[in-house]
Length: 327
Ligand code: PMV
Image 1 (tube, rainbow, N blue to C red):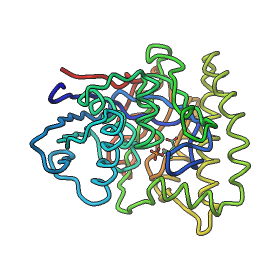
Image 2: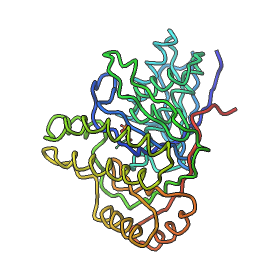
Image 3: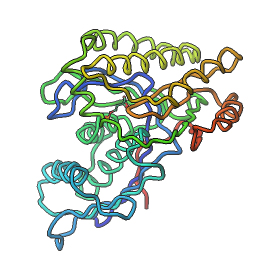
């Protein structure tokens, strides 16, 4: 069995959003989703199954992970141990090059990197589909970070989750898209995605309509990507984002991930469009605004964003690669 194995995975941001689980136990989604993998936000994880260990040791950015975070990763390691038919504890060292749990999809890159490094360290060689299925058990969006470029996650129908995995639609070289992330100061702790999704499914009056209408968003997005129709891609991206947040807000009590600054940047993006700049926003389970554009307009958009006092950091991302091993 190899000793330490290290893998790198990039985060991804959904253009067509996932919100709501079909089966919480297997982490299968009620809706498909479609995302762009981002080169600038990544996790590097090393895993070493070592017979001398008395328990799993898990460090994030050099600090031991405690309580819920520890259990979540330990349970994921149990899945790998079960697959590999062994019961050796592991030492996991993971580093994010961006703020963890700040709505920048650290669980996507984190569980994709852990799925690859962990499975290889356990001497398993999984196909991309198998890796995506495994990564999904850690976090739904992680199933997409197995691949680079533009990626689609199948909702799937099977009771055992075997058809709930992602596939690559186009590699990172397909289209010179950019995703510019406006990191806003986030003092509040937002509701985690699992809790938010379950609460929404239980109480939001529009939930069934959300599920029903997602198939249409996905097929329109596939068409727009095929034609490289940027305006259409942007329009569907904003629509899916607003629909997801409108749905969460319609839960009882409503979930509001936005801050006043989020709303300000939404309007700023729309004013850029009125000025002829093709920019479209999307937002996840936190206040940060991500702006989709093409490479030729990225510099102008970044310049406008950098003038905003509410924005702490501007990170300009290109399409990134899929999860891969590091030497
Ligand atoms: O799979 P999770 O728990 O990271 O949830 C992802 C939820 C959203 O980021 C809001 C949407 C998405 O499709 O990534």
